[in-house]
Amino acid sequence: MPRYWLFKTEPDEFSINDLRSQGTVCWDGVRNYSARNFLRDELEQGDRVLIYHSSCKTIGVAGIAQVTQAAYPDPTQFDSSSAYYDPKASRNSPKWFCVTLGFSACFGKVITLGQLKNTPALSAMTLFKQPRLSVQPVTADEFQCIKQLARIMACVE
Image (cartoon, rainbow, N blue to C red):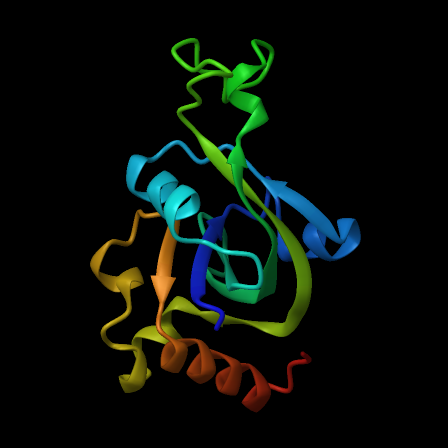
């Protein structure tokens, strides 16, 4: 049975539209230990992911992706030319992990943070308790509620 997640991204760096155009991507560059632990220990192939745009004009959920490959060592940690290079990581003992995501859906409109906060069924979301966490769990009910909000807003999946 798939599990559900929310991944944050800054759309100026990488957006749901970028994922749509590329089809699948390595979700790399995560450098928070809690988020890394979710990626490494809990995400599985087939899990569903809400793509959340942050640090932008319209903050909120922009679409859905699916994990197409479970955790593997993040290659950017070994690349000295990468902004995500970690000199303490080694191929024998990687510190950071990534997953591969495939595009599923782009919402017609972003479901804004305000809309999420004003939806009683979403009041317990991790997003509101740990707002800086870039990879976080979402319950099945929360995921379905957000999909329903997207449908109400004439979105496609």
